[in-house]
Image (tube, rainbow, N blue to C red; front, side):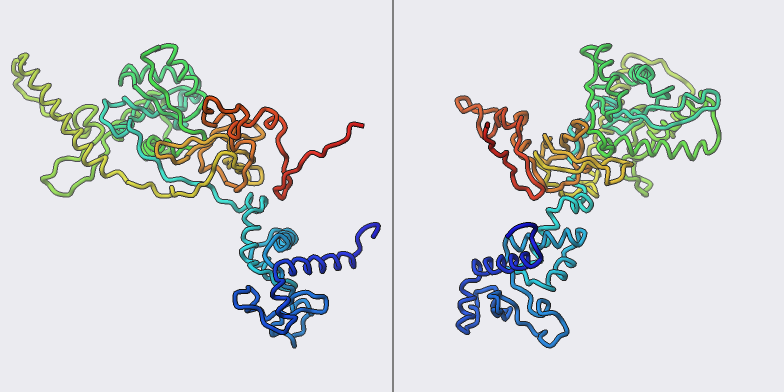
Length: 493
C-alpha cells in the first residue's frame, strides 16, 4: 500500500493479472470446467486438458504429475494470446540477452503455456531493433534493363564510360602513376590515356586528348569522384552547347558501372602479365598501354566457332579500323590509278562492311547477353519513411549510421534501386544494396512536403498529404515500444 513494491505484492498482482486475462478470453471454458464438462471442440483449450487451481487460474494437467518438478513446471499457467503474452515474451527475450525463438519458447514453457507462443516470439524477434541491427540482411533488387543508349547503334565512343584505374608507377617520374580508362558503351572498345595525377587539370588534358582522337562524345558515364564532378562543370564552360551530357551513377555502387569495371580488370590482367616486376619509364609505360589497348579491342564479342568455314568473330577493332588488329592487309605491288569512281566504290564497300558489323552486333552480341544478372533478386520493401541501417565499407557494423529514407527513386520498371537517406551527418544517396531495413517507419517522412504529389486546386493547404508547419517543427515523439508520447498539458500558474 505504501513504499516500494514487495515481492509478495508483485506475485499477487501477477496472479490477479492472469486471472483477469483468463476470465476475459476463456470465460466459457472456465464455466464448463466448473460444471465438470470438457471445453468445446472449437476452443483452443480442447487438447490441453486444462483444470482450475485453488486460485482460480487455468493450468494444464499434463502427464508429469509424478515428475520431480515444481508445481509451476508440471502444471504451467495457460496465457491467452494478446498483449500480456507479448509482454511476457518481450521480457524473456531481453532477459535472455536477445535470445532466439527456440530459447524463448523453451524457457517460458517452464512456467507458462502461451497460446501461439512461437508466432509471438517470431514477431518479437523480428521487430526488436537491436536484433535487426545485428541480424538484418542487406536489401536487394533485380538488375535493371540495359539503357537505350547501350543497345542502339551509334558511332564508337558516342556513349563513353570514364574511370580512374591504377596506380601505375614509372621509374623516371614516380609521381606520375595514374591513368584514365575510356570505355565505349556500345561496341565495348577501350581507350587508355596516361595522366600525371587525379587533379582536375590533368583530367581535362586527358579529356582534350581523347576528344581530339576519338571525337567529342554525346554522353559521359562515371562515378561521383570529385574530379569528374569538376570536369563536368569545366566541359560545360569550355564547349558550351557542344559539351557532352554527363551522367553519374549512385554513390558507393560500383556495380552500376560494371560495363567499364570489367574492362579495367582485363587491362590490369594484361599489364600484370606483360610487365611483371619490371620498372618502365614513362614513354615505355605509355607505349605498353597503347599495345594493351589494341589487344583488348581485339577480343571477340561473339561466340568463336570451331568450324573452318565460319567467318571470324566480331571484335571492337572491326568498328574502329574496319578489321581485326591481329591481321595484316595485303598491298598490291602494282598500284593502279585511283579514279573518283574507285573511291565511290570503296566507300560503298566500306559502308556495306560496317552494316554487316552492326548486323552481327545486333544478332550475335546483343541477343547473347545474359538475360538475368546473378545475385540480384527481389528482396527489398524500403519505402519513404523507413528507418534503415546504412552500410559503410571498411567500418564495423556497430558503427554503421542509422538513417531515415526521405525519397525513393524508382526506375522505368517502377522498381526502387536507389534512395535518399537522412542521417545524423547529412543527406546521402545510396543504392538499396547498401541498406539494411529495420522494418520501422518514421511518420515525419511518410508524406514529406518535398515528395508528395501536387495538391488539387481548391483543397485545403493543411491536408493529410501535406503536414502543416507546426507538425513538422514539433514532431510527435515515440517511446521504445512504439507508443506516441504526448506532451503533458501544464497549468500556467
